[in-house]
Image (cartoon, rainbow, N blue to C red; front, side, top):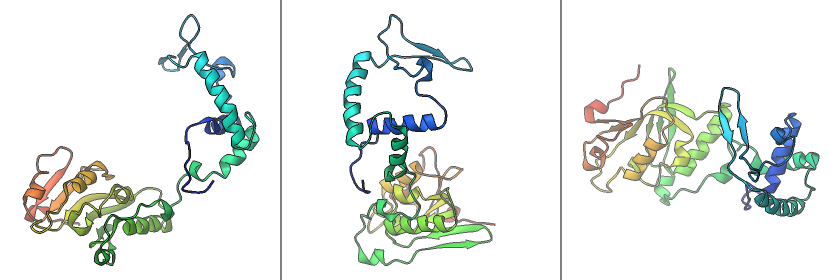
Length: 256
């Protein structure tokens, strides 16, 4: 199966993968009932007490539901090329399954193309400035897919598992709706987000973009939005919870 193929992530084949992994770790399947099936058709609902006092009471499935699954299970697993219960073959298939593995940094195939189609914006110079342990991401009008790809490559070069930590991130294209996206925000962890525009010509920054910045903020502290103009497009964020908004002179950033 190749990247881009349609995959049912939850199904019988994946159940076989899970069962094989549990067995490999010495954790038998459904140990509570000695490897049998758990269902609700008895005179009382099954209960299980966990260490610490929590109690679990089973509410689903019924035995008939499990029988229907069993029929589909056998067919699906055989169609996948191995027999139900063949843990060795399940592990072998799991090891060669691209969508079951963590994504590899630098794999640009999964980066969505930017909605910004401007050639001029696409040629914009963007760079990460670092000095004395501090950093500033200046993006110009760069396309978000280009930025996402570049930051992934940078993280891979630096062997970073976490998002790229930066002190300030200047939003591309003045906070346009097309240039700062969740896929880009997922790659960075910023303290300050800078927007440079008075919004007179194109009504920048876009409200959805700023909302996404707030919702996808990866920094440890409250996100700080720094606007150089106190205009309608920026003042709407003044009383929004979960964000620190600054304007004009008070938006100046002084980094020791």
